[in-house]
Image 1 (spheres, rainbow, N blue to C red):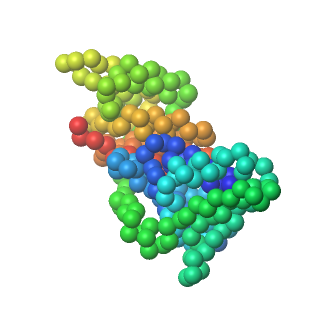
Image 2: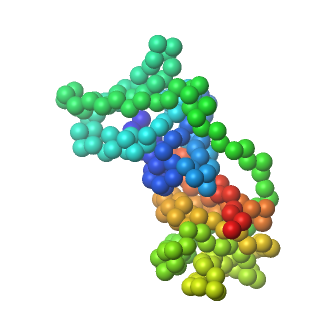
Image 3: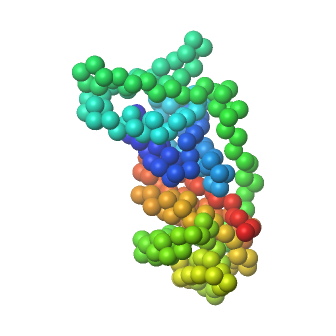
Length: 240
């Protein structure tokens, strides 16, 4: 169970915009949903194999606390993680116990009706994806350099220039920067859209295989295969 919990924390809390996610698990699949605190990104995911320990619908709040507990030295070797249930037999948390049994923590879930009312992710009707590619390590590094040089800019602009996908920061009335993020994208964006810099970079920083898709309908999507699961991040474009 610990590996799955660490994977969930890494692909939600560690991005800096999620502190609450929802799990919906059956013996057929385990689904993950989340909404960024500023609503700039929607997360949907699924583990490659159903997780028997995650059967039921529940919320995982205060992900920072969960991360701290998971990384305590006492739980690195020989720890026992035990599911806990409430009086209605709903999964409501995990008890952590070290190998010696003399160091314990409890992490509490939100039960189904609470998480359902707390986390309302917007419905995504679907769009046409006009560009699709695998981002290179070099391109991500170039994006980081431009973000550092334009640290005052919370958003960057995306547009195509011929067959190339170009990212731009700022405008010509002040400081500005631009670069080609991807050559020969094989598609066109007729309109310029803006996306949050930090969120975009943090997702691309995740380990695993990634696919980026962009739409002229005003959305970007990044999928990340962690090895344990497939995480999909949808970023609605800003009409800045």
